Length: 293
Image 1: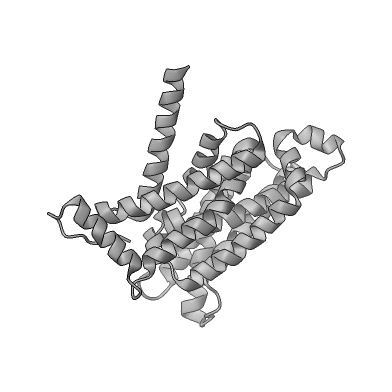
Image 2: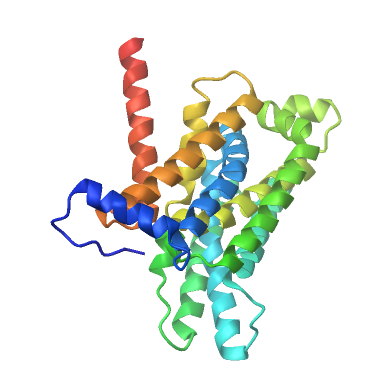
């Protein structure tokens, strides 16, 4: 969502507008957006660290693009068949989990090359979503799903994301040691008796849940960047997975919050603004590290 701001005003005046909108009891979209960033940053930091350590960002990309199929199907069922309970976020979650299970099953059983399956899931999910959206009566703008629109989230979205967030954090808390073993050394984990195939499937399902959270923030196309950039930055400064998750969560919260502010002040869409902030921070860190070396 792009918020119109009258040109010609000074930066301090625009910041004053931001604080007025943030504190106005009748306008709650900014508070919801910032709260969404706070809740989601915990899951992003934890799952993103696992993705970076395991080096499966391409899998996360396939799952995120498959989400559009679930969103399109949910919108179609809502509009054409009157299934009001079929929320787009629920459709996104079901599609993401289905994509995760398919990729994990093929990989665990070795029926096909994993990269071929990932490509098929990636393209098939996008194509399915676009077909359903084209058949949905009325105007449905796919851009908000492709590039995110954190500023138009409703309280219902916030409640659904909170439930997903709690579920995700609970699973990570209980299965942390086994998932850590899987990500660092899969062969050693197998020798220790850990069911590698089952936990790989669980890992992809956790990624699917996190991707659904991220789609609300930065959209399908940009989701992998916010999932991996904070974790990659955190990994340069810490030596343990737990510390990496904590620092990655803080960085994600910072990027989302600053991106929302910059988007408001500069009349930019919030999703791309968040990714630009994260990308610039990652570039600066890489340059400073090279200079210091």
